Image (tube, rainbow, N blue to C red):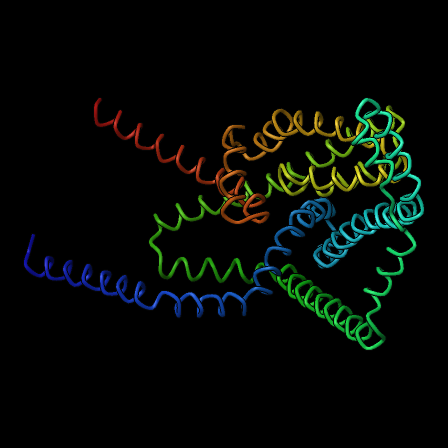
Length: 378
């Protein structure tokens, strides 16, 4: 190796070591700056993610317009496809809210009115269970709850004076309006991205052709196509799996003659978009809903949902979602556990397609190495 190359290599490693040392010394300030920058770009990142999800539906609608040969149809296919995509998503959200929210409000009303009766029935049930144990039986029999006093204390706590109530109301309204404004801002930016997405594709092509070699550009294009196909397939598979689980939950509840079957099935299915744990959250809410009507029946619902969830987690989910992204079932479960621990719910959702991308790229790399080695051997 020539002297100039050695010096160049030494300078490179010295610079890397210096940057590493500076990074360790000033770790907290650097993390603070990174957090500030990330916070400034949060809405843009969320808008890009929302645009990506909407685009999956929009592209399929645009393909329908491609069959029409009229020039004026081609000019309006983008805005019409985008409008139809937004209408579909809005319809799904509206149906979900219309099914779930009224039932939850009704259940809360039923719960508040039936709590004293449920408590009395439970007390009588426990007295019969501990019939042969006088001490426990006496303790249960003498247990009383002043529901009127509890209600008054609750109302007094929630009220806390007119001033506190006004402060709380203003805080809630401000938070809701702020969230609504952020969502509208994100939605508008996502619409701009979708209406002019070819501009971003052309910018990528121009910058790539200028600064990346042709060989590396082809490899990068291949990787990006693989990532796009994996993530879009995962979203589709996740939605399909949620529909399957929600349908099975609703059908089982109808067969067992449980209340709120359609609503609980819809709730379990929608929340199950969060991998693995979503069904448990929906199931907890569903158990509460059934409990307000029949406490004993809620135990049956809980048992049924646990069995259904085990079937879904170990058989349906790895096959449906795993097959959609080309990832073996064992890796699906492993990615949910690992990324869920590292990043919570976002980690659970994004960990599976990310793992699938790494898995596919590793397979391609290994195959290429094996072919290269076989060619050298021959």
